[in-house]
Length: 231
Image (tube, rainbow, N blue to C red; front, side):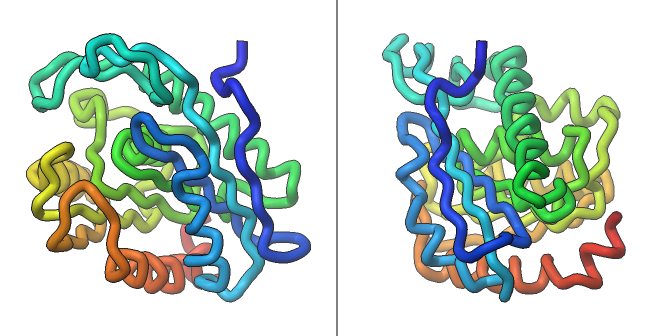
């Protein structure tokens, strides 16, 4: 049975897109939630882009009293020491890896795929990018954290140590506290992965400054020379 219950939203900004931008929404949302990113980032790299916004499947979420909603995996609590849905995270990560592979059918190899997400979607994006089998162009995690950090620390094989990583977080975030971002950056730094952490005076949200910083990040991260050097 397929992980995805419905096709992803897909947009191309021109013929023969050079990059693919796969974005994973947050808990309780769907792929439409960030469709505005097409306009925000269409010209950020100077090349045509293919945007892919998948929809998480509907499932019960323990943290929300068992209510069914779009979710990439189950949530049991909000504290770092709370149990995590390891099987669910890995299942979602595998589905996203499959989606990355599908881009090759559109002429876009994994090395030209940008993977990112917000909140729970960002957690899956970070985990997939940092532990998955594919070399990616860049990874973005907004208002999120690296799940299953203990497994990462145990020495999982990593192929994206050289890929640029952008972390953006609101200092006043009450849903995913800012401390999670600091912990994620520190863990990555320990393993030699230099993630940029950008902090904003907002809560669990995205503002115009963050969008501008992301545009700048993409323009810097996706230069032909940088991509060639990471292959």
